[in-house]
Image (tube, rainbow, N blue to C red; front, side):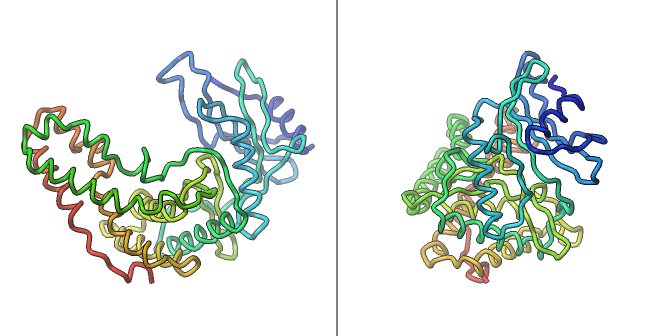
Length: 348
């Protein structure tokens, strides 16, 4: 397992221009790649380092198959670019005029970055935080577009390819079983998917610009004056800005932690707040508003939890040979994909 010592950290900090004594350090996040492969040399480790000045910094160590030094530096440059135009994001340190560099530590080769540690991490998304986050994302989009900034890297939330919210492909893999359960219903679902997908594709040739790519409660913080800032550009890459806005909005409305008072109805509160905040800073066009229910229906119908990951998912039912439950899921998927009324008030 990848480990670092105080001496390793001190050497790294010196390279990044920090000549202070390390008082203590602790892990903030670790991916345990060796659980699946004991011989793995992949690493993702984030540590907090407390210095004798009272200052703290975050040191990130990374070696992953889809990550290059060029990409990490580009992601860091984008974070700095946003900061230069007023977005709250932690200050980054440089070594040899770059934000990232390779190190060999304890038998592992890792890319390392160093940044300021910020307090006020957001753990619960309220209606107010959702609206501020929507506004923040719109500001980031405006800055990226105006500066024609690009980061050549894949993103989590492109609805035209594999993404982290929904998957028609995983639904389709169960075709044979579903045809045996209700062939006309399966065919109707596929037909409706194809119709909506053609509508959603209307923006596929729009310019793509850099996006942070993972707006979520664990990557947001609130400053003393109530502003919302963002850190962790690990998933930063190029995306169509409209796709990023809608996918991030639904992500924040479904997969975060929320106040108890909106438990069970969080999407009806958080989604409009996020979109309202975004729209006030970067107004949605009439065409974007028209396409929104199509994209929403697609995401809802083929939501990854419902299709694959939840304990009572469609795939789980099929694995158990449970035709009745699979049929109920097919009916529910059909309902979701055909019933998404457009509510213009979502955009404020």
